[in-house]
Image 1: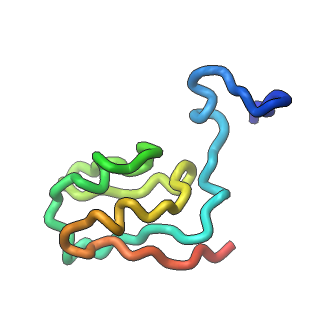
Image 2: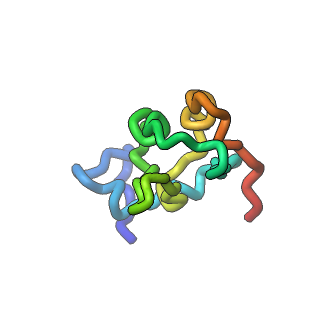
Length: 87
């Protein structure tokens, strides 16, 4: 794992190496019965941590999800719930 230099400035592409999901307090969880596959969660995720699956649904990449809750807030069908992260 790469170390972050003094001052916190990182080289381009460094977030691929530095997994930031450990910052999370709450994590998003899908209710696939409610999901209408609208893709808003994927489009609005600021960390690009929502990946499409072959069946048209999506899954979270918890290595990079920071738990901001934008996906849950913007989901038109309330198919995403933010739950307390258990570590």
